[in-house]
Length: 346
Image 1: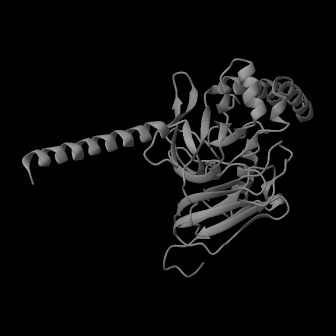
Image 2 (image 1 turned 90 degrees about the vertical axis):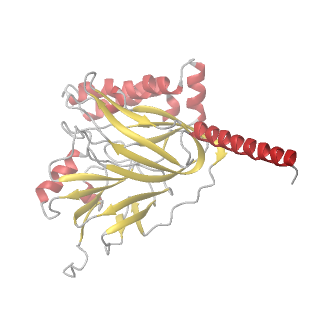
Image 3 (image 1 turned 180 degrees about the horizontal axis):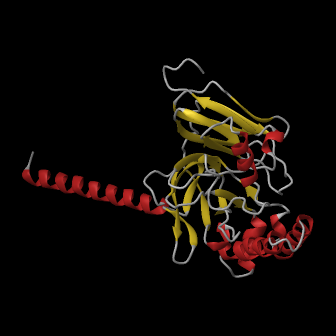
């Protein structure tokens, strides 16, 4: 090979490598991660200002199957509920000359907290609270009810210091994510920082849905149904929402996994069920009752939706539970035990 040809080919090869590296960096910057289908979320608490916050590695992702890796680095229980905002809500924010996040806070989050305050202080009953809340939001954001903001799942209740992982399918659009666990003053975390905006673009990630190891179905008529022959180790639960409806606490059902100190302790199960009903004073405040540790799951989803919950099951007692009033009465509190490998007694 002629010397000039050698140098020419070397220069072309070097330029190709540089351009490829620049393209890779650009792709990473566009989505906040080199893996387009993973969103890393960290829950933190800023004690000085008493703010609860989500730290997200990106606020813009391609459409399709997306895995949310939720790291609860705070000392309090949290979750990551995803709302899809209808076009009417997006247009209303533009008309108000506000960001979607600010508009949601002022139209949804703030009214909820303001109307909740006199209720939790026993100044009004729940029916009055509900009427006041619907009137307030209808005045500021009627689109929230019609055509309606949709709940699209997201990582479920995750205990302080724990990590959880959930995969959902998101269409192009604008989304708001929140956590409404409460602090000791009965203030929802969404009101003090845990409210973020997520944009899903028209670009498709091309990621295939996970391959499940087990299936769980939830419905208003049959409750939670799952394969009770579960073994120790890594699992991907395909969680299917056969239907959806609004319960006495104004919300639908979701699916949470909780590790229990003893799944035959009825007092513990009763206190856990009460703690998960946000209408009660002291409920959803800071952390679940002692003896119950949330490991994740999926938040509320619309009828026909499916989420995938990734978890490594260790030996011990567990329960699947839905965040609805009196979950046992709805067949939505199901206990089970994971035996140690080699133990044939279970």
